[in-house]
Length: 200
Image (cartoon, rainbow, N blue to C red):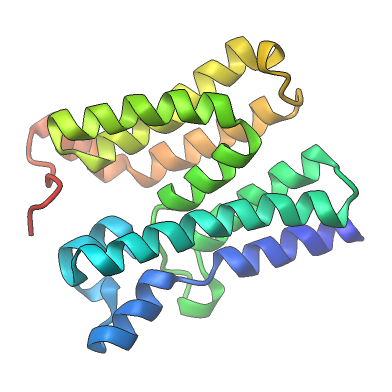
């Protein structure tokens, strides 16, 4: 029962769309009706500016971190439920019950989840992703590299870092989910017309 409660609460927490809330509070706009139409930090940057985007990024990351710790706390350290709770928070962000199931792509929440579950792998992959973004200015490319890198490192070096064996399955699910949510971005990247960081 506590496992179900943890997963459900994590979904409901993840479903809080801070980009939507901040957009409504600051400019009375639905962030999903502007820019790329995505309810996330990158589109917040395009529509509302740097300050709100940083706040959204941090809060969305915090949702993922909180979900993992909620799972650990409610189940006395069950790592499988903690990972499932993190996944539930990402699903909540992507398909939020409060906003007609129209959310974002879950990248910032994914960062929070993976940084909590597999810190070393997430750190290494995050550095690679940041370098890729700085060079190409493609946030979507960095996001994809982050989840792919985290998956590869966890798969091959999970034992070395002492990760729970169940983590590899959850990380792979999260990677597939992220890539699927970025399928339109991947198509634009291949065509060379993906929006770059800083573009309107």
